[in-house]
Length: 363
Ligand SMILES: Nc1ncnc2c1ncn2[C@@H]1O[C@H](COP(=O)(O)OP(=O)(O)O)[C@@H](O)[C@H]1O
Ligand SMILES: [Mg+2]
Image 1 (tube, protein in one colour):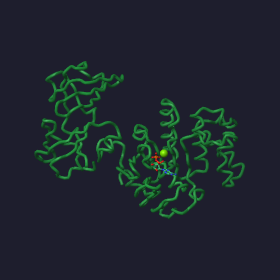
Image 2 (tube, helix red, strand yellow):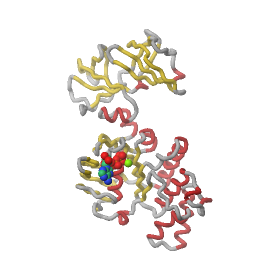
Image 3 (cartoon, rainbow, N blue to C red):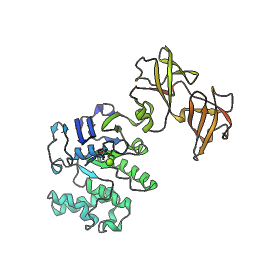
Image 4 (cartoon, rainbow, N blue to C red):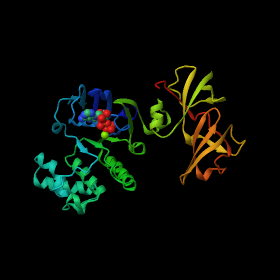
């Protein structure tokens, strides 16, 4: 394990399998989650994120595999005995109860005393900055406020693990960004383990201690956000997390830590992270669009013709046509652009030796 090397696993998943007919929703998942970690399950729709979360919560039974909570086997334990907090995508508040009623519900189930419940409800409302809303009904709250109450309810009984399934996806972009900060803050304050599901790569990158990338019910890669972004193992990960150019290259020579490569009729060195390189003479390279520089003709090594431009304010995206590489996607910071690219115009482009990453041959 990476970050969690220093952390004892609070939850271990071993060989988790769940099939629905032909569909392998979970296809052999092994995972250790560290105490107090913010772990995100990221993957496209249908990759098995919700199935894994629901199985951890105990609402979905596994076909095979096991869960251990601090070493204890909980695979067959019913959900209420696992006592994990849960927040879902929709606003799953009880519509006929006030905010305070919603938050106290799990506490009443657990037979807390009235005094304890009142104190805890106040504490939880404060935690999500909703102190003055105790007596409101859910339909008198905005979407963001409802999700805050759902969060307060999930935390009320002090669970050691909080499971969140796309809790922000129904909110608009600005509010989502605000709540991302708040959730992150809450995680820091509470030292509760968060297992967070999203299909949104930016959300995963900005919030997580570690990210698990799922596809077809299998873990594709686990790592720190910047590790996954900068050293993707596979084409799937490089493509799903951010944007990438892919270059098929021939390895002409191996020079110490560098590969002397040929692709699209051009010759260049690759010194980027290449833990995936297995000595093959053909490799697939991933090249991030923001690693490519563009300049006036003659200032960089390769030459291309601008096929398309898209101005995004702080950045400008370009597609360049190069006779060998094909279309090359470039993302340049607008303020640093020394040329004003026109569609049909010629520019030169290049990148540093460490910009390309060698991918594993899973494709
Ligand atoms: N109750 C179910 N019955 C049949 N198929 C299901 C059921 N739940 C999930 N699936 C299938 O399992 C796969 C994974 O689903 P899910 O875990 O919901 O993915 P995600 O949350 O990543 O979008 C999908 O192909 C989905 O259609
Ligand atoms: Mg889902």
